[in-house]
Amino acid sequence: MSQKVLMKGNEAIAEAAIQAGCKAFFGYPITPQNEIPEYMSLHMEKRGGVFVQAESEVSAINMCYGAAATGARVMTSSSSPGMALKQEGISYMSGADLPVLMVNVSRCGPGLGGILPAQGDYFMATRGGGNGDYRTPVYAPAYIQEATDLVFEAFDVAEKYRTPVMILLDGMLGQMMEPVEIKPRPPVQVDKSWVTIGDTANRKPNVVNSLSLLGDVLEQQNFERFKKYEQLERVGVMVENTVKDGDEIAIVAYGVPARIAQNAIEELVGEGIKAGLVRPITLWPFPYDTLANLPASVKHVVVAELSMGQLIEDVRLGVNGKFPVHLVNRCGGMVFEPAEIAEAVRKIIKGGV
Amino acid sequence: MANKIIYEKSRGLTDTPLTYCPGCSHGTIHKLVAESLVELDVLERTVAIAPVGCSVLAYNFFNCDGIQAAHGRAPAVATGVKRVQPDKIVFAYQGDGDLASIGTAEIIHAAHRSENFTVIFVNNAIYGMTGGQMAPTTLIDQKTTTSPYGRFEETTGKPLLVSEMMAQIPGATYIERVSVHDHAHILKAKRAVKKAFGYQVAGKGFTMIEVLAACPIGWGVTPVNSMKFVKDEMMPYYPLGVYCDRGGEA
Image (cartoon, rainbow over all chains, first blue to last red):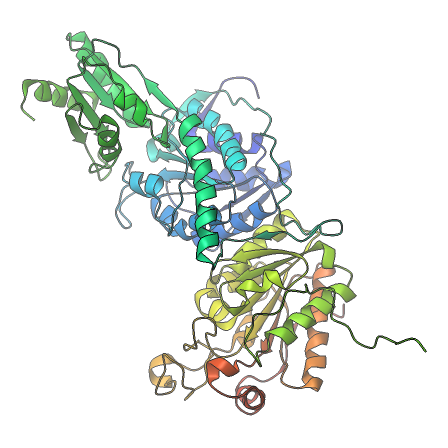
């Protein structure tokens, strides 16, 4: 498919995954991501793949674990409370070095919360809710086109680094429609001699495992695993940065809220307030360097997020005290309008906040 | 006259020394599984799933590809393997804490979908790996580290009859309960295990063999007395036999 078509975010992501060579999808119904498993149930088997509606999110991620252990390209999707249930499996897959693409079309919480858009899963996505030392690469698209492009990138990173990866969006991007051109590319070529595919006539048995009872051995395994995370921190950071020398305001936002922040910036620039946007596309690894190296003209860093101050913690780590950092936020499914962000910036400049 | 080999260890097992306790039934059950895989000529295309519990280290002992799974999740992991590799032979080797407690959703729905893999369900009426806690399968009045006064029906229910329950699921193809407490029963258990794998080879759907097993260390009895416990205490409550066979003869 090399033409622009109008697609819903969730369906575009599912189609991109199939075109990226996804061979197995395991999921469970939860709003607002249902179009992904629905699309997969319609298409996967016809196109040589596998679709299973699992009995729970816990089972879905463990089905991913089994399928990934055979070397297949594997995917699951869910929304916030469902992603919370998958945390056990994410930790196990990290510990067993298994690739999987997980899509979290997030909603507002905590608990059952609601189905409206929010960004309260930032900590769960970037810090992880599973046990032990691991990291999860997290991609945060702001456009449906970008979401489909990132599906290919995320699968490749998952397989190259043998790790679970997540695409984190919200119900706005999942449910809206935009023109999109899915741009297939060949999957990354990786070593798959480790797979447990039941093919031991001419090789020794393989084991996929996260159990390691000897402290010195497990420590060494963790050290080795963190080398690949360090590699990703060096080469895997993705960020859009429009802050120029001379700008006094840097607004940091990710996902659809970054598009709202961009509208606020245009409003501010029209008034003569020089402002730019820092939009992390990878939430882990986080673009700390971009924030550490903001131009000296910047007087305020403003974080616009749909949560109670989660992104702001990474922003502060990056800014490291060089600039004052302010929070502009809504939550619970309420979404700020550009004027709200612009007004907050005006107050910050006046010293009112 | 040259020596004639009348018995040898199955090549379905590795040479790694078993790490199970003295008198534990796992070694016997491993042997039955390994022999069945070799006799059906499927060992080289088999994937073993070992979830949390005493048998979590089983991937060291079975001479085939192995996957360690989270507690109770082996049927979901096996589903993932089998769906993308339907021509491979897949089995989950689960204990009673794993299958009958934390993993009830996974085992029921694997049977419900009639996933074409085999489950070896080792029921020794206790959590062995963690040091002898009460399981859903622990017998009434049986003392464990979390039922120190014996299991009370009033607060903990009656022991869960897993094979009886599973046989009610339309997708369950073959469910049998066996025991390995003496030679005659080991031979019968072997036939059941091999039949289950034969059904899988023939693509007949979900098969599960429940094996009554001894845990002398967890129970605090000698290995000999643990076999008596299986025969005299477990078998009356957990009757042996075929609970469903919807596959016809393999």
